[in-house]
Image: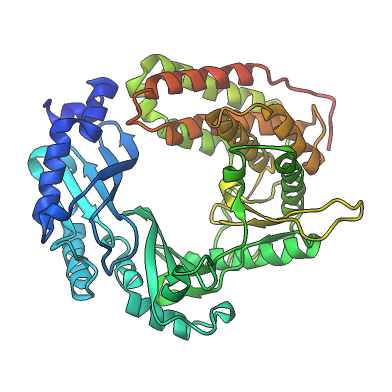
Length: 483
């Protein structure tokens, strides 16, 4: 096997990165390391690679789900694990290592480590660090929030009307395990888990600081605003913010993510997209917001372009010709955007995509007799005061992604239905800016969503970047529209 630093530099190309992620030699090293952590090594089943993130020259991170045989007290389903490869000079800071050991001790005392004897280890010869849920020294509250007894006591004291009476015990499932970044847990009452119902289920979203209070407030403000605008659209209201745990609790919401329904789009799904457009229009008309004294974030194009360039860094290194195209696209997008009329910033969702829109079965009819679905918007953590075209572009890009991934026809019809609901006419400057944002966000989606460990990564990436270049080249700059 080549030198780890060379592989992480990207000089051996995609093959070198994939060798670390899924090559047979590295898999043997990884399984051996896991065996040393387990009380019974033969319990280790499949190690399924779910996601990978590569920062050339700095680190490679991979997220796995581990099958461990019979369920344990830490929760239902597979166990989450993160593996990070770094060059020798980028070794973890000593204070973080110490914090990890302290947290590991707590997890063991709470009975959350089993069937593991340890939840963190390193393999210096291979530049590897392995962290197993529920360990993350940057989120010390993760251990106690993964403890069924602590959770039961917590929910018993929180004023969550929808949880009365509180369950005696909960099945705790990891929804997101991203050490140093984010964590989401699901608490399902064990009694309810035996029945086809989600009643009483709660989701916990953890934060590394008190910022969760601000997001809790914003979500309530948006729920109030949207409910006042239309009875068919709302935002998911958090149940509570827990200051001592820097955590927001959310109830289970009725509905299916729109992204799942796009797998087989039909006339009903297209009608939902018209409602989604109208919902976003209502969101963009929201009054000033209270950010709990914090400075309201923004999405300036120049800053976003820099962020996208960083996100695409691995594409530059692994596919140099594609990297040159990306650089040209970013330059072109800024020039086109600067030629378009500006407008005052509005409240935006900031991450408006199909995963964050829940669709429930139709309820009441509207004034024209149409049966309207009930929409619930979730996850306002990326909110900002910015160009409303950002949200529009993000959703157009997301529709493009799902229709392409599902190989479904009718993308243009779907996008037009959404724009009709938003009441945005062709050639309007806001739509033109949205198209530029869509192209930029498609770059970011390509970097994030095409798996590095996929054998077709190079061809998928190159094809998608070529499509984006073609679409951006077709965007015109009208000059006859004024606000």
